[in-house]
Image 1 (spheres, rainbow, N blue to C red):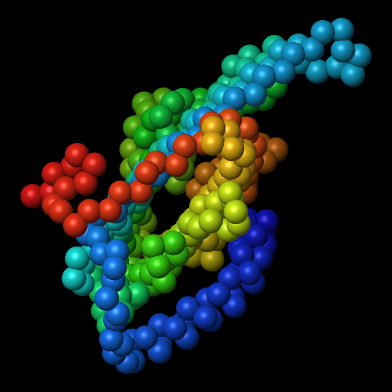
Image 2 (cartoon, rainbow, N blue to C red; image 1 turned 60 degrees about the vertical axis):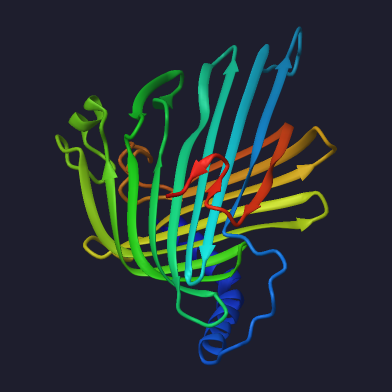
Length: 325
């Protein structure tokens, strides 16, 4: 927990200047009415995304330095977003899917990445220039396949599809500086944790007592989202979620952070670097006795195929084949 709080403090230090700037803007923008100039690129629906496929392979023969004779790693990332805005209403949706696999002669085959994440926010504009919204948020996050924790080459089932799964319902204020940056803060959030795998239900874990399949927590929630081209041929997509459970050690803030840097090499190839960090005080699978929480870190580097999905804008009642009633 000390490592998590130290990381949390570092993040807050980096964000302090940004947060003060945001607060100053909110105060000035909600206190006056500004006449907006005509928008030459008006749209009601906007969609786009990103597809990335990476693969690496290595082999050794009579190699004195040692190592695995064969290794193969493959990973895929898919992102899709669609936004809606009309009058005072806005609706933002984002889907992320990560899958990764690695095989070596000494360790066999293992997955090294597995996540799906759906985030949806509805907002009602409360200021005159459309940056501050009274919002409701829904988030669902889980995985597709079985996850194992290893002691040497022996793996023990620790997670599976919807085991765990996290579902958040939240009401709060959303500051949207642009489509690229937003900060959502909620003092009233309901977070459900589910475990549906029968063997994991019998063991208990993830804050859920043995024999039960779900638990609900009420607390404070904040999420920061950012997506932008930070340099020529370099894009960054990041998200930081913080949750404090009012009912059980609220000082132990749960953290979920994803970072993805994409470096475009040419029309067909790119390099990607992803860094994910998770701290959940209810996930007690670590330490000497495998009964302690810890900061989880996942770092992946890959070179492969990167395809941004074409951004589409429409003022009609449908987008990408989805009919809107």
